[in-house]
Structures are given as structure tokens and as C-alpha cells.
Amino acid sequence: MSTSRHSRAARALATLVISALLVGCPALLFGPRRARPEDFTGLAGWQPGVRARPDGSVRFFVIGDWGHGNAGMYRVARAVAAVAPRAGFAFGLTVGDNFYPIGVRTIGDARWRRYYEASYGRVGLPVFPSLGNHDWYNGEARAQWRYVGPSRTWRMPAPRYTFVIGDVRFIAIDTTRWAAPQARWLAKLLLAVKQRWVVVYGHHTIYSYGLHGDNERLITELDPLLRARVDFYICGHDHDKQLIDRGTRPIYVVSGASASTRRVGTGPHARFTRRSLGFVGVSINAQRARLRFYDIDGRVEHESRFAPRPRRLGQPATSQPAASSQPAASRPSATARSPRAR
Image (tube, rainbow, N blue to C red; front, side, top):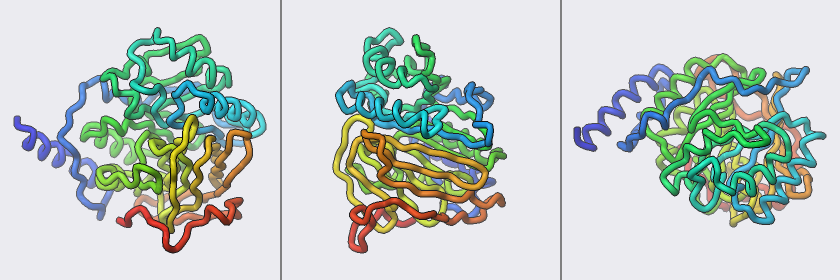
């Protein structure tokens, strides 16, 4: 079958699955790239070994683009370790680029000890990773879902996977190898979601005021999947911190400054943007989700709160902010560039 014929077939099949979920959304145009079967072994029934707090809340930290082995990486890890007890974090997520510059090929690579075990392994909390483009640069990332180190905190069952903690459904996706099979898998998961909150996390930005800007392919192919059922899309790739609120769900969170930083702008959809090392802390309960952006000294740079989306499928969920600690200097300006509207 030619590449063009395969692409048309993949798009047609994906549309059939997604149409049941996304009535009225634009048609999704999936690329022709094919993936090996082992790349799509998402475990819908995987048990993470973590429970919600006694009050039902779920609290975690998010790091991204962290695997440099530099001073910034260790400083952010120390900040996470300091904040975790008072914030009540039970686990962490990574949004990819776990090992620069070209990932790890084996579970015996020395960077497991130097990069992970010497930093977040010492934090002592489970970490549920996702993959970034740098993790695939050597053509082989499977060591990352086969690794069980001395700390036993690295918990990654597959390149894409899902798990539930409390009333929150988490879905880790592999945006570097985004293709029709993964899109169908995600659509089916979202159609079956029963939890009050849904968090999807992966590496690449969809909308961004950072160096890479908007990702046109993911705006077309991934974003429509998220709009109906997802509360937060958390990512990295741009080495900065961003909170983008376009008035409906999902809310777009960038936590890509866990080892190095790059320039970032602002715009009308930005609640917060900052070029500074750090991480994001999230607390979710039945009434609201609270996001805090931390610097390397453990100080809160910004806080926003959101109510849960309406339970009825397809009903728009508007953002409901609480009082924010956002400094005036980081508020969006009327003339700043904006991620494009869709």
C-alpha cells in the first residue's frame, strides 16, 4: 500500500472512532507515519501504586526537559525535595526529554545513576514519565520503560499509558511518535472516562509563547481530542513556564524549565509566563484544581485555581479563576503575540 493510500485509510478509521466523541469538531488529519507494535502498548488497567490522600485530594509535581546532568537540574531537584513535604506531593510526572542529548539505549547507562537516581531518585517519590524528542534521538527509547533502579521510583510501563489516582484520570502520551494508532487509543480512553478530572501529559506544546511557538500539527490532530473531556494538557519542549487559558478546556501548562531556560513571551491567553528554573505543583480535589509555579528556591511565582468542568459530555467548560499571585510584570499585554485562535 502506498504512503498516500495508507494515510487516507488511517485518517478514515480515526475519524470513525473520534466522531462518536467529538461531534462538531474539525476533521482530524493524521500523518502517515507508522509505529512498531510495541510503541503502542498502553496499559489501561495499569496500577500506579499510589493513592489519593485521606481527604481525596491528589497532589503531584511536574518537571520537564530536565535530563541535562547540569547544575540547574540538581538545583530544581533539591527544590522539589524541599517543597514536597509541605505541599503534600505523593508523586511526580515528567513531560519528556529525560536524558539529553540522545536518550539512553540500555538500562545500564551511567546516566541513570548520575541523572535520575542522584536527583529525583533521592526525592523518594514515585515518578511517572513521558518521552520527549531527545529521548528518541538514538532511535531506541525502550530502556526507559524497562528500567527498575535501586530507588524503584521510576515507574513507566509503556511509551503511552494511563492510570487513575483518586478521582483523576492521568494519560501519558508520546507526542514525538504521534500517529493514528495513538490517536485512536486516546479517543477510546476519553470516551470511557468516568473520573471527574482528566490530565493528559506529553512532551510537545500545542500552544506556546515560547521559542517553538504553536505546533500546527498538534493543533489540528491532538487539540480537538482534548477539548471534549480533558481539563489539563501538561507539556514541556519549550524551556520555560507557561499557563495558557483560552477560555475553555483544556488549560495548557508548560513545565519545561527543570534544567535550563530559554526566552518566552506573553499574550492575551497567558495567565503566566516566566523564564526561570523550576517546576509546577498541582493539587486536585472534588471542588477545584490548584496550580503553583515554583522557582529553584521553592518560592511560589504564580498560583491559579480552576473548578471542574461540567460533567455533561460536550458542554463547554469555562475557566473559573481564583485570586492570583501573578505579578503585574507577567500579565498579558494587549499587543503581545498570541497563539493562534482555532
